[in-house]
Amino acid sequence: MENKTEITNKVVLLSVVTDSDDKKAKEISLDELERLAETAGAEVFCRMIQNKEAPNPATYIGSGKVKELKELCSNNDIDLVITDDNLSPSQIKNLEDEIDCADVIDRSMLILDIFAKHAESAAGKLQVELAQLKYTVPRLIGKGKALSRLGGGIGTRGPGESKLETDRRHVKRRIDALEEKLGEIEKNRMTQRGSRDKSGIFKFAIVGYTNAGKSTLLNKMTSAGVLAEDKLFATLDTTTRKYTMDRGEEILLTDTVGLIRNLPHMLVESFKSTLDEIKYSDALLIVTDVSDPEFKSQLAVTEDLIAELGASELPKIYVYNKCDLGVVEKSNTRDKMEVYISALDGDGIKELEEFMYQVMNENKRLYKIHLPMDKLSLVDYLYKNASVKSVDYKEDGAHVEAILDKKTKGIVEDFIDG
Ligand SMILES: Nc1nc2c(ncn2[C@@H]2O[C@H](COP(=O)(O)OP(=O)(O)OP(=O)(O)O)[C@@H](O)[C@H]2O)c(=O)[nH]1
Ligand SMILES: [Mg+2]
Image 1 (cartoon, rainbow, N blue to C red):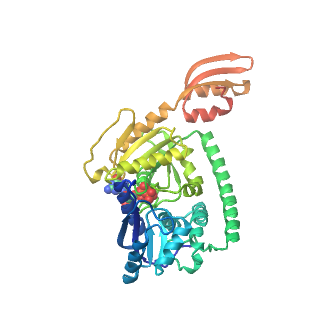
Image 2 (cartoon, rainbow, N blue to C red):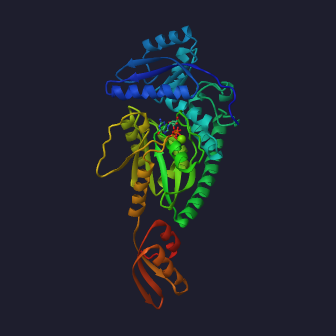
Image 3 (cartoon, protein in one colour):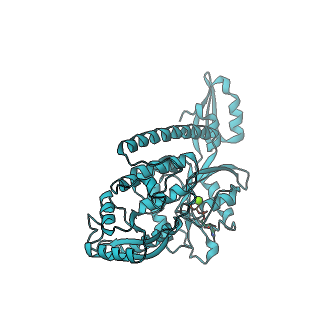
């Protein structure tokens, strides 16, 4: 069920910048935190930044700064403080105890809150709940507050009405149950993937930073009707659509959940079954919003996460999006497939398709196929659908060497010798 009462929190964003931190990166991260907070429905009152050798292990910021923050909160009716760094449960508890008049959540709790708000599918909701049980709940337990009693403010929204109890044993049981359910979903997905592979249709996954325009691209190409919004994490579920390309070739396109910097490993783990869609595709369309001044660092974060998901070996097409928003300096690297598009008005999509054909063709390779006597009709099929190099008829059937694309390979899969 949806959370109907929109609660607007008045929030302060809090960040510690250490000597070894890249100052610019911290600032970008804080800008992004502000967008995340707004997406979650908060009104950002101000930012508080402390330059410090290292974050305080007990309270994140130093004691002088804590006093300042406490005053700021009580004088301005601030009810929530959001830290840019991810904190430990005890740091959150201590800081909250000190401030006394406002709740404290960290970046990941905020992201999970948005996920909880946007999750639509059963699997999406289960994944969010699992991540919240593992991440958010331990950070609330110390406060002696039950999530359900916090009244649904930011950081405490759970998927649906399933109450997240703070009883540790209950939490443990619920985690086990969710992992089991997600395991079943995962099995089903594997079966689906298996039959998809047999169908041999080439599958492109659309991946990229949140808000890059992934859903818009899927919609433009396939009229999928996926929600595309100027919000972070508008998409939490994967959507796969069949698409017939200009030259008549059928492919599958999958829209995926957006990526963002500083995602804790645990969160990536909880979303594994969704994110695995990336790994199990045949090639990636990496979408980047080039109108964003930070697009380079967003692309770097995206590529790191792709590597973490074990998908960096897949063929990649770099899709630089939102070119309608201004002049972008086009720089094409020779060893990369790069294309400049506008998913909104469709510019550049033809060029993108050319690259997609290229990737599909490069995926063809020579196979040795042994067709037994009762399958000799497939020789004819291969002559029609593949480039046959040699056929050798023997007592045990036909031995064929042919260059196959993915689809044709799917058809003769059971007879491939190498
Ligand atoms: N001007 C312009 N805006 C675009 C373009 N592509 C997408 N947008 C806008 O950018 C915003 C985000 O687009 P989405 O398609 O929702 O982005 P996404 O990558 O799916 O985002 P998440 O699902 O949140 O990860 C929307 O407001 C789109 O209308 C484009 O080519 N040009
Ligand atoms: Mg989307």
